[in-house]
Image (cartoon, rainbow, N blue to C red; front, side):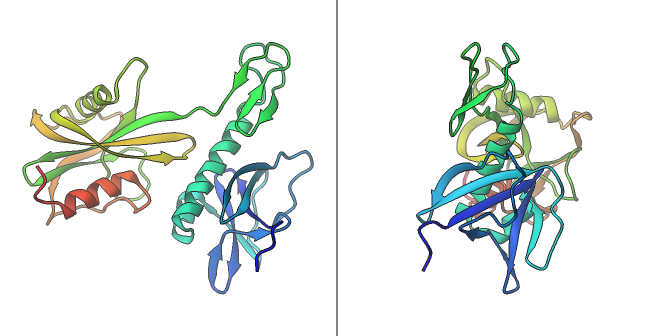
Length: 262
């Protein structure tokens, strides 16, 4: 039986999450104390509860070496070893640690910030409050007859294709952002922009908002500063697809499973 004073531990070095080796699998560490000792002066954040146990997070400033008991994996790679709730909390932990590291000083007067609540710091000099910043981005699946627009961004790792995506700009609606990003990156016009869903995207602190749209004219002319290629693909001629963890893959899977949708 789990002890009431146990906790789940989210320990990071940079973007790598510590996992415990257990019976040939990798699992999230759980215990009364941290799996590795936090450096002196480290803030241990309580980020949530899961299965009636607190979730605690901290980061270290050196690389975690693999041992017989533990190994550290990049947050994206850790997806394959965690349940959906665990992965979502791992992302939240990483975002809070990223915010903590980047909000040490007041952006107004430069004084050292003081943590007052789980996700709030306050300047003791000018009383400026700081909360985690979330960067909003859109991602869109564009349909043309029985094909979908897929792209390869220059910053993609591997050989997979994804969907047009980009960050929301100041003073812009989400739908306006969808139209602008598609036009800027591919030269195409679209119509019938409809909301699909959203997803926290902790790389390092984003919210991805998904849409579906229809082609409305133009020829593909890629933005070479952003993309290496773009094309419409039919269901029987698909490129390598993004991993299951992404909203891009959810959009593509929905399109593949719903050929009747127009």
